[in-house]
Structure formats: C-alpha cells, structure tokens
Length: 107
Image 1: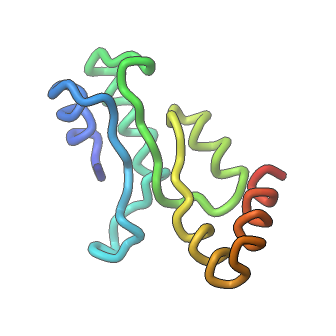
Image 2: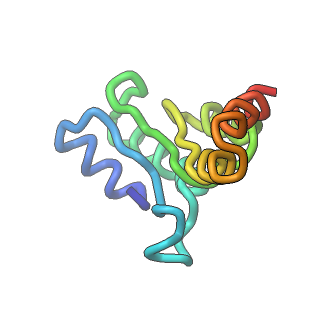
C-alpha cells in the first residue's frame, strides 16, 4: 500500500492489516518510503473509525537504524520489515553479519 485511501479500502474490505511499502523503489523510484506514508495512513484509518487493535499496519521501507523502529512504532505501526540491512549483512558477512545487524538495531 502506498496511500491512505488504499489502507482504508483494505480495512473496509475486512482485511486484518496492510504493509506500507514501495518495494525498495525498484518499480517506482519516486515513491515515498513506507515510514513516510505512515502518518497519513494512520490518520485516515482513525477517521474511518478503525481502532489500532482491529487492523495491523506494517512498515517496509525507510528502516535503516534502530531509532527508525521506534519512530515507526510511535507513529502507529504494528511492526516493521528490514529488507536491505538484512541483505547487506548476509551478503557481506553471512550468518555473523545477521547477528551483528540485529545487535546494532537493538543498541
């Protein structure tokens, strides 16, 4: 989902949640990241009568450091996805890279 209208449609259709993502910018390199779209999506869902426990919103995109996780949760996200950090860590250092990445996000 890339806009608040689509998130509201998903909620009204009875879905359990949605993922805010621009698919890494591969298809549309001018799209905003999921974390940039999050505030307007949460406002629109609230205006549509949605309660946070009724509909999960996940953010996939724009998460590069641990502080970004806190920002997404504070803005209303139920959870986040970390694509590029995982790929870079795995490609560079294998399993040890993944462990180090998780520790860095936790710190």
